Length: 122
Image (cartoon, rainbow, N blue to C red; front, side, top):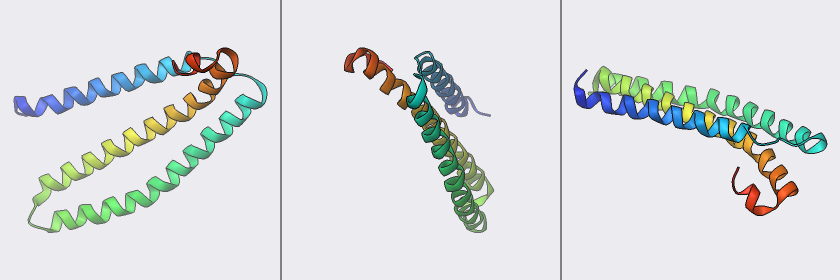
């Protein structure tokens, strides 16, 4: 691997570490109790079911486009790059939705307990 090709890999790892730090920060806030926590959990589960269903459709599309790229003049390296990019994009989307749905209930709880300024720090 050339030295320039290492840069995206390093930046990808840094991005994953930053996402993990944000997720841990979100989890440090109270998720509330009772009905708020229950509704937040239902929203989270529903969003994750949606993502899995959406990604099953996306996988078919990615596979078809990947095959078309492979049989074209673009070659196998472009096909691999396409699949890696699609996987990275899907992973980013999943992590984002997972974190956002966990943050929603915590933002609501912070707003109810301490007002808008506290909610904006979640």
